[in-house]
Length: 59
Image 1 (tube, one colour):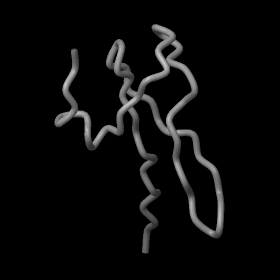
Image 2 (tube, one colour; image 1 turned 180 degrees about the vertical axis):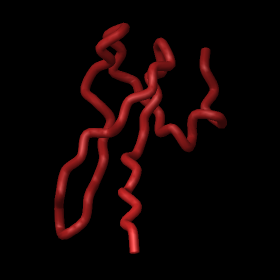
Image 3 (tube, helix red, strand yellow; image 1 turned 45 degrees about the vertical axis):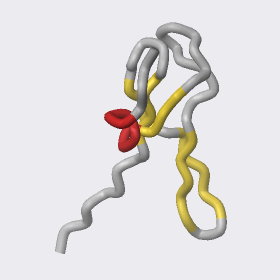
Image 4 (cartoon, helix red, strand yellow; image 1 turned 135 degrees about the vertical axis):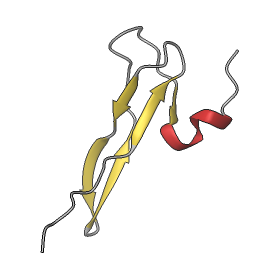
């Protein structure tokens, strides 16, 4: 039986729309993902989860 790895949560930069894999942290026996502190491409600190990006209104 093969194992399917867990996909990381993804985040989209609100400034330039680059997609990032979340930073993983292991707490309480489970994995938690968080957005990066800053976008390496444009310097923005605003991110939206990939799943919510389609419903996210951009200015």
